[in-house]
Image 1 (cartoon, helix red, strand yellow):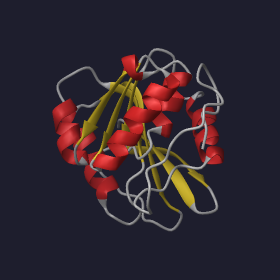
Image 2: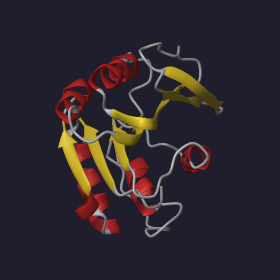
Image 3: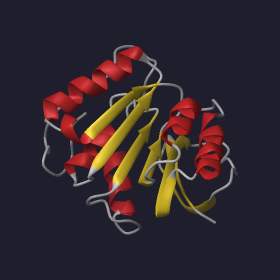
Image 4: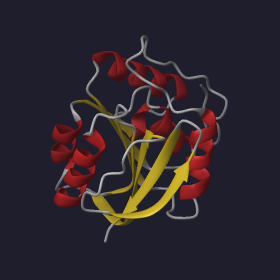
Length: 182
């Protein structure tokens, strides 16, 4: 796993040990950033990486010019890995890392400046995507004109939870659902 583009291009990233995380494949990450570049402006935006795992998505966003990124994951090992990857890519000054479950992290982030891009990759089949999207919609965490993207298993049901579906991009083993304000 490596940073695909931008200032940290080519840096190999660490992944948490064990089977508890499932890093987003390079092909899916590259496709995601190509799609969102036609939807929102990455440069200078605030990026939220939920269920962050290794932090690869948020680090990719920072490398491509996002102004600031927040990483949230409930795993102590994942949080340590994210911090290690931020230090390795020298992007830690533009980031904050929280060890928290998704709903608590989102509530903690409410009331502040919204995020232009929110990416989440919850454990497949957990139902956490719907809870997180509902919390984002209810607490005004998404900035005006921003998008939420959720990576789900290919056959997983798409949650209808307070935001409209803009687009769905399918891959062999997964799909990314793009949501926006209604």
